[in-house]
Length: 150
Image: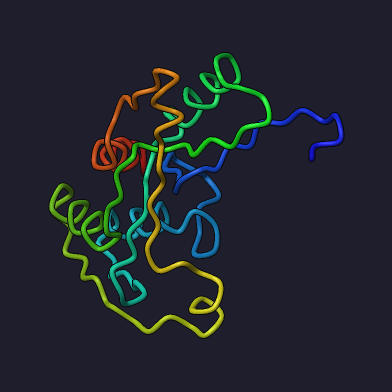
């Protein structure tokens, strides 16, 4: 029951897009990509850690599509429909930059084990039904981030 309220809920994936405030607790993937570009070793929690990654430009386009074509009182999952292992994303970045970085697998702290879902995949059928197709895949998003990092 919405009690006469109108809403559209948009669930966002892991967003990549040159966040100047990226750090270990906020947009950690971009933080790790910056470490790789600098040749630093990175620490990643052990486990597969599948996520849906989408560039901020595609997220903005998806949100616009939902706002202009979507239905009220509906939940939309924003994403590409594909999930990737964080480890693979970081290995790709190492290869593309020629970095000497190593990926160290470390145990997740207890808090992370409790609050984080180990693997995550979005069903984006509703969003695709509105005609949305991302301009770039996860690896192209990583390329864009790496190109814009100092």
